[in-house]
Image (cartoon, rainbow, N blue to C red; front, top):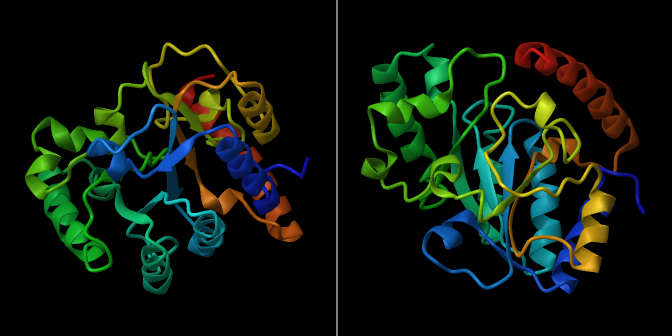
Length: 253
């Protein structure tokens, strides 16, 4: 098995899931009912290092896989050339919103900003889904914006944390640079009745091969974590370990 959190490991994961009969769909596809009996909603949160997203998008495109890429408005994520390139590969582009955190809880300013940034991302793709950014160092949960507003009024047909029943769709996320990092997650976690737990990418690959994975899955990755560059890989490992300590402190664990 390739070293984890490399493009080689990611490619092997996709191969294993395809060989096990999973169809890959975007979240937009799921929202409009384009699903099969066995599927993976493939989602990427582009928090930083958007160039890494271009690499994963190319790997997927070669395999005729479409995924959902959620971009933040900050320059570490919002790179127009990269967004255009990923959209041209037929991947879904969505808005990774953090408006309430940006405006420190001011919902009126946040919704105005949300509307403007949504219009901006629609210059690249007819955006129909959005997903909150966890903003772990902020006291504000970006999802609270929808306590007084309705994202459907903005042409958004789905937000994963509101519209997916995670008792029916198994959720896998690489938050914490592992697949069982709930203790490191401030907000990227869901309520679920599934009992399966996997630590490494290789654990998921083995489960796909032996048929023990659930039939319906959402996989969320942060492409900044996935690289074949040795120096970048090591830097991400060290940085994430520090972040995990901070997040455990925030969570009180």
